[in-house]
Length: 262
Image (cartoon, rainbow, N blue to C red; front, top):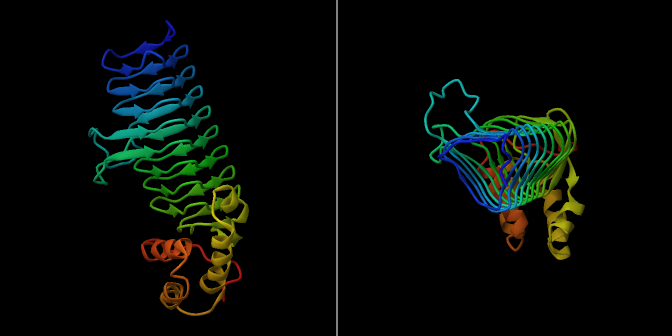
């Protein structure tokens, strides 16, 4: 159902089962999937594709031009998957030409609370929970099942690894490793996200192995590359430890370390 006060561009493609609330504005080159509900006063600009069964709150801005000084009106995109919740005043920008994909991506089953910002060229995975006013700058990558407390700020190009938990009010310009809890201005690691891993389906034996690997990678003195080599030798059977190795080696901004690191 489309409310009569909504303004819909003739080039928009809206599934008949989708709902557009009063005063919504849907631009050209916008695709909205089945059973998705768009709240009052929300503005969606294209090219933007939104999948099925999403719930979008009021006064959201989706697919607006990227907040990038180099952007000159090029046709970039926003793609949002299925079953996402976007709270009131959430803002998600389109991509830029600075990536090959030219696309900002939000996956499936995410829960982004009020006032969250997802900057241009971000890639957000699946089942991410972001409390109120989480701010992701441009080009941030968030892997699956990350949990953010409120008012977190992530610097552009930083990455947040799978099943990490980021405490409210934290700020970082570095990558946050998978499977850990971090907190503070600049962020430090405060151990493994054990509850998150259990809820995320990581087996107990795998968690036990990762706890052992944690002591090597985060608590032992030595050069980072030497510690990563130890993980490859001693924990090759642990998919989670090998994910750490890959994540650390691919880092371009440096990785947040343990608060008790030597």
